Length: 354
Image 1 (cartoon, rainbow, N blue to C red):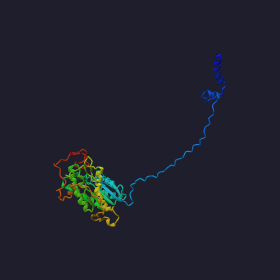
Image 2 (cartoon, rainbow, N blue to C red):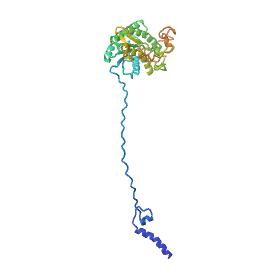
Image 3 (cartoon, rainbow, N blue to C red):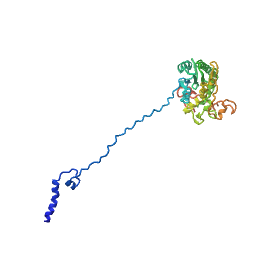
Image 4 (cartoon, one colour):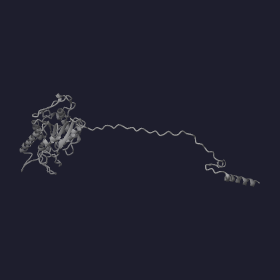
């Protein structure tokens, strides 16, 4: 009897499962037998529609255009590689000044000796007609330490005839500048690494000063700004802020950015005096006599001067520190043979100097 009950107990669930309705969601035996209650989802409010973010349009930031005024003064820079350096320096000075436009027309290897390469006498008038400047700045002569060839004749730099011939070329050039009817500045050359070249350039600077001032122009002397306390060529020196920086390239000829700006610094005040950037009063303006020298009237507000060292105070040969003429080389040096076909002593001869 007990065995029959056991069998019945075992068979009963199977029978129930056989006749129970199918329930796919059943989780246990009771769900299969009695069924699973349907669970109702709670009534949640529908989600709100997505909020579109407003697009914020930022106003464009105005860019600096460095636009020049229609009546801006036009300064035309002429010359060789020194003139080109001056133009770069002036562009740095007046980049943010809408009242001044710097124009440059330079020929790096030009000069007064080799007229077959570039003839300034033939081109000054054309350049002035084209550019219509208010003021002319010229720097020339660093490439002129070479023989003058006239026909079959060659005149060496050491000959007196060379000085006479070169002086006449300066007179002709100063006449051409005066003939433009524009006020003009002549920037003197600085010293160079080659002592012989520096000595020649120092003598030429005196010729430029004499002839340009006689023609009614201004001569701007930069020599003291590029030598050391002993009066010799210096790679480094004071910049326009009075800090010691590198002014010249390793070749002892070209200029760093600071050196270019220092060249231009010597022109800054004379130019401002001439074009009256410090005021609009007629009394502040420069009176230019086309038949005589330019008479400069200093502005009322002088806020800085060129950096000056103790040696610079003797720059006018006033005897304070004795004779300050450029010292001659310690020994006479023969002309070294050029490696690039240029004459020894020229600024564009890049042969090394021992």
